[in-house]
Every structure is written in structure tokens, then in C-alpha cells.
Length: 213
Ligand SMILES: O=C(O)c1ccccc1N[C@@H]1O[C@H](COP(=O)(O)O)[C@@H](O)[C@H]1O
Image 1 (cartoon, rainbow, N blue to C red):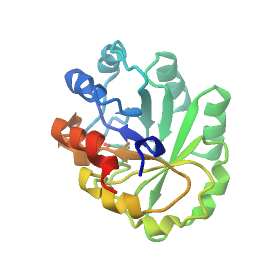
Image 2: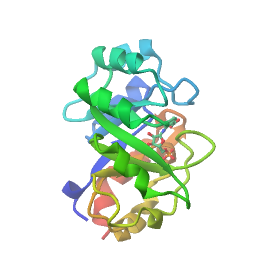
Image 3: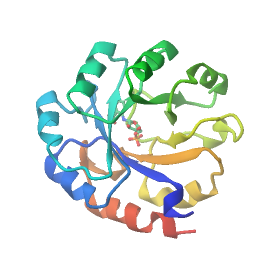
């Protein structure tokens, strides 16, 4: 697999020093969790400082769980993110309304063995889908789902693959064939503690992940 084939998102960032270290590896996306119950929650005041950093080509993703439309817009106006990730039970109407405000939208679906891909047809307005593992928490469970459930033909939109991905999963990722796989989303498996990514793991990911085939 060639590097240019797949985008990389590293999620759950909040520590300024750690962000600066990770930015040196030039991931395509960095994610920030605006869900108060998350152990990776970024407060508004922290975010005001974080956006003063230079992100270069790396896009910022704001992660929300069933958040009010007005709050998402307010955070967008404050320049907290470039792309919004809706990680709850947001409706197709919510996606449409955010699109009408000019936002780029990733809609998340929590997947288990009973996942029915028909639901995707309701979310045609989303720019991207993201598939995460259904678990106790809305996200950040650190567990993989059975990727076979996605099936090849059912996903008509570029999508992020997520849920417990780590640096040792490349062989599995390489053998997962889906023409619309757009990005890999890494979070808890790269951490020393919630919100703090381990540099050796990120280095291994960014330098070696695409060379294993
Ligand atoms: O990480 C969290 O705490 C979190 C909380 C609420 C919604 C989403 C969250 N994280 C997202 O979960 C997936 C998968 O993470 P993991 O690899 O299983 O740890 C990822 O997309 C994060 O954006």
C-alpha cells in the first residue's frame, strides 16, 4: 500500500507539547474531542491556545457526540476545527443543516455484527463516513470490530476506518480490500495515557506503516 493511498488521522489530542511533536510527522488530520464525558475532552480555554499553533497541511477535526447545533457552529466560528466528526446518533437533518453552514462533515456509525448498511443511504449529505466499534463508550473503546461486516460494495462514500487501530495492524489493514477506504483513524492504541500520544508508536506508524507490504 502506498502512503498517498490512505490518509492518517490521529485523534484525541489536547496537550500542546504533544501536539507539536505529533505535527512533525505531518498526519493528514488531528482530532479533538469536545465530548465532556470523554477522558480526552479538550476544554474551550485549552483549545483557544491550541489553535494558535501552526498546523500546516494537517486538518483539525472536531469530535462531537449528540451536541447542540448552535454549539457546533459556535466552535466552528471560533476556528476550533476544519472538519466536524459527528460521533453520536445525529440525524440526517443535522448533517444537512451543518453542510448548509458550509462545514465538512464526517458521520460516524458504531458497528457490531448486526450492523445494517442500509442506514448509510439516509446520510447522503455527509462528506465521509467513519466506522467505529460499538462499545460501552460512544468512542475511544480501543476495540476492533469485524471489518467483514462492512462488505465491499455497500459503502459508496469515502470512509475512515476506526476502532482500536494500532501500529501492529498494518498487515490486517493491507489485506482489507475496500475501494472507498479513505483514511485510518488512530486513537487510544497510540497512547501513554488518555490524550497523550506515545512518540515511538506514532513514529513507527508514520514511518513504517506503509512499507510493510
Ligand atoms: O476517544 C474518545 O474518548 C471519544 C469519545 C467520544 C467520541 C469519540 C471518541 N473517540 C473516537 O473513537 C474512535 C475510536 O477510538 P479507539 O481507536 O477505539 O480508541 C476514534 O474515531 C476517535 O475519534
